[in-house]
Length: 247
Image (cartoon, rainbow, N blue to C red):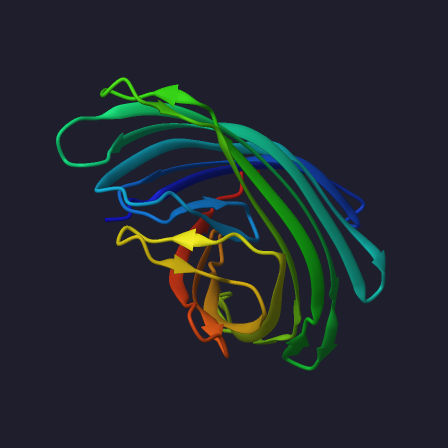
């Protein structure tokens, strides 16, 4: 069963046009495939035929967001990190191994408003790599090193409707869809040993709502379904994020 993911973010804004900062994501997972997640993208990393699997760790690195035009926002991120893993392949013994991972991502987003409506088309590209270090298991068998990579391009629109009550509450429901192309696909192997090929074009639908409270706190809940138009691939999930301003 998947356990909650923990994240933290730090950022500094300049003149409301530039933002720099750092972020870290630490996750613990009890079943595969194992997600290695950034702020705006998620990747499934295959590990084959495992009966039980647990991991801790995640990437850390800088990001930049800038309004390069009245209606264009550019953001980018790079991150590096390690994971520390415990695996029970047959249900009889446990082994530990480590991985090194890194990712880079860039995205350009449009920002257009008409009354209460906001339209945000975007196009982005990302690349992720994770290398499992070689280790000797409890049966004295050497498990060789392996590297998993995933390169992804995606583009699509998001539509948001902004509401504000007289007492200062703000609500912003939103829906969006993105076309996805994994130009360097990672073959995902399930716990049953079935290989899922994520190559080819597919679509991902997402929806959610942002609540902003009069005193500045915000709550953002989203859900997604990935795999529209794909023959042998599907993924779904959701997230909840709470933001508390320090000033």
